[in-house]
Image 1 (cartoon, rainbow, N blue to C red):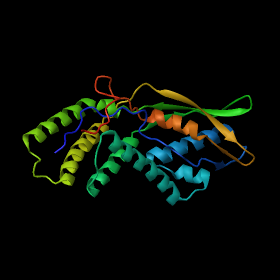
Image 2 (image 1 turned 60 degrees about the horizontal axis):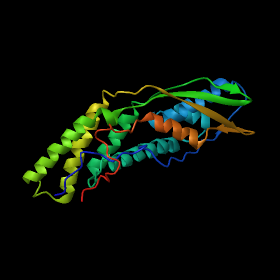
Image 3 (image 1 turned 180 degrees about the vertical axis):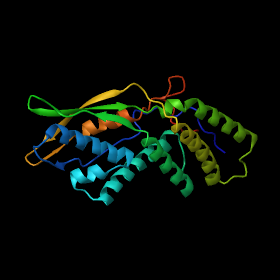
Length: 236
């Protein structure tokens, strides 16, 4: 059986290639509050799975809002799997990874200021408290991987089928992340200045601004002494 690496591959962001439809039919009344409510509802819909306000403001359907949330959760699950070098060969493990991703995003903390005007352009400040689950779990993950590899060397998994072996490894790692998520730690807050882009009958925020919010929500930098940027995460 192959051994797993105790040093996960360093990455800049777990959520990549985010493409969102952000336009919203709007009005000129109460812009300061209306713009803030929109941005707040957008983040809540994508990360918290709370989208009643988003549906009311945008006129989208509950089905589409749910699909938006599940797409974001699935993207996190895929990137967690890639980050830790997991091979998901079991539907139960895939479901557990989705559940973990939901639990992580449920811990999202952010604040949105009322919109303010500067040179005829409106902005809102989004303050995000980055979740530090990667660093928080690092010591336990490294210890788990080392102990798992010791069992590999002893031949404990010699009679396992490949899928059973990968499922065992993935399940143990997911359990660690799930347990630690309940006591999530956060880094110092980051504030993103988000521009409200307006047209004749709509307003929205840019994908670049949404990506900046997204990048701040989950801290993905592994500790210096355990991250190896040259490590592919795949054993020879």
